[in-house]
Amino acid sequence: MAPLETLSTMLLGMQPPKHTQVRSLLSKAFVPRTMASLETPIRELVTDLIDKVIDRGECDLVNDIAVPLPLVVIAKLIGFPEDSTERFHDWSLRFVAIQDSEARGGGAEETVKALEEISAYANEVAELRRRDPRDDLLSILANAEIDGVRMDEFEIAGMVVQLIGAGNETSRNTLSLGIMGMLENRDQWDRLTADRGLVGVAVEEMLRWVSPVYYMRRTATVDTELEGKTIRTGDKVVQWLVAANYDPELNDNPEVLDITRPRVRHYAFGAGGPKFCLGSALARLELRVALDELARRLPDLEICGPSHRMQSNFLNSLLSLPVRF
Image 1: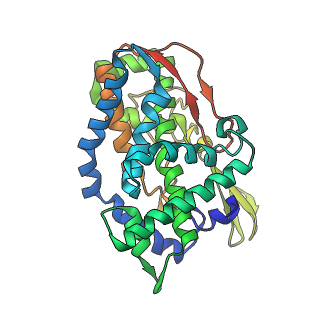
Image 2: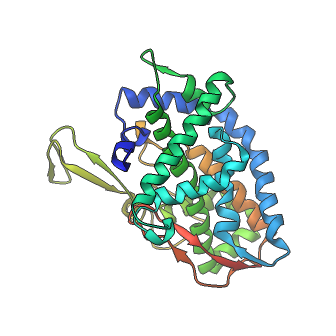
Image 3: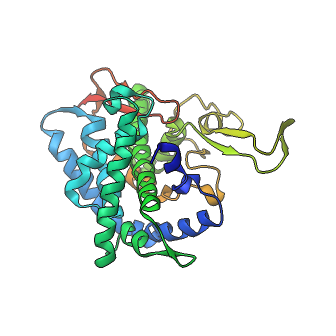
């Protein structure tokens, strides 16, 4: 399927009642009990990633730490075998880097090819889960019925594509860009390493400061008026989440990165309601644990070379960040 057709099979592109039904299915994997059970394995994973680089005294914070963390976690939740994470990252990059031919390794056809590969692999594993269900998202999707009908191969592929992007890219970009922001504003990193009790607030400030997804677009279903502007049925409405996160009416001195804010207000996960990010609790957990361990074990972390950003007006994405410690 082409990217636009794929969007219609994702939760992101659905409307009620289908959206409500599919979200209810997926939410079973993100209940508080499951999230609580993930903290120890996530901490073990972060510990292992740091162990692999700590004796070198330097690494690429993006590719050595920020990339594998959410990849391994979301791959396990989906139900992909552990040895599939490298392919998982390749698919993710080729799909989300639609505006960056260098990052995805070719022209726009690479995006379509990645979608085809994801679809084939997801449905191959889904077929195995129909015969042998497990405690993962593919088992839920492969065996669920909506209005008495099982999800077809395109719908299963669309859900997996969204989970790859939403459950992976956003977390890694928030972690890498958030840490880069603190290292460029050194007093913030030093405050965190001196008092790791600030980790929770730091995570929320990172989400606000980075704004991993710049915008979302919706279509107006009724005529309405907003701040004196007329929006007619059928108009395309763009929600600039990054603008909201830097709105001085939402936070004082929004241009300043401050991990000691008494209250951080942001729309990194949306504005609530049925479209609020389903994986927000997982993202916060990954960021909290990773930030805590990095601050504890690498307090002298510093940038030692130029960073490389993805060319995109949709995702705030960092492709590499050399650091030493």
